[in-house]
Length: 326
Image (cartoon, rainbow, N blue to C red; front, side, top):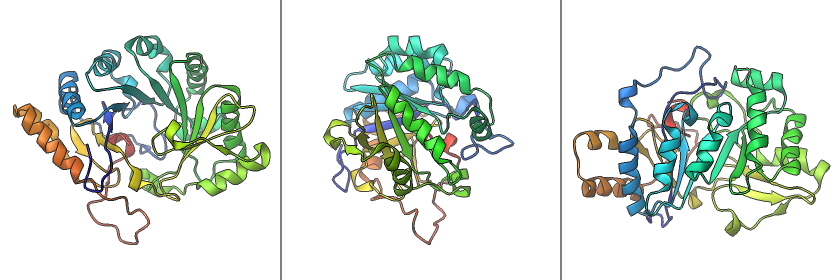
């Protein structure tokens, strides 16, 4: 579907839970978050019904997110059902990887096309400091196993902070040398607890990588899609990517919307405003009315974020990233 700024919106991120088994410092408060009652979380049938509406409006790609989506008991069957819907061409999943080995076989059988694994360091102690949990070995094993399957596109998502070391960055780059996967460096946005941390921008990251590995060779955007810009390095099995929403704003190319775990449609990650689709579902709204509401929301998608503005309107998102399926 085309929005008011002539962008083709064809990608939706669906949060299937706000719960998470880790406690990353930039995502979750130390004392833990207050989770939604289970009754407020969308059911499988509700998610599938909305996906049918999204598909009719031109959504072709679905990303399953959380919280941590693998803590949802029925996640494999949900992926399989979404993958089987007419009009949906690609289904991927974002995970912290701690539970991935338990579900990998089922997810592959369900038709999952790709998995994004969040990992900010290959240092087990540093990992424990960031996530507040000691499960680095499970994540490392899952990455090695997932990378064996040629039909599964594996991406590593790193959100480097100001105190992230050059060694951390280069260790992650080495993953792309040794494995057929993409390592993406994502600039942290000032949402939720992310406002308490300074991010490493793309230029600083490049200054850590290029002196060691040489110039990065761009991969044409037509081959990859999405907000990341990817690069190859001679001798690497995989690639390096940058998602630089802060230093290289790409809102004019944004093709995505989000559905929160409690059924709110968000058309921009920054803004609190959303459309309460769950209430419409539970008040027996018919599909044509649902589709019109979704279409209005998509058409009104904001022109872009305003994180660099000195003003901070009250309608900016206040929830944690785990609560909004960022």
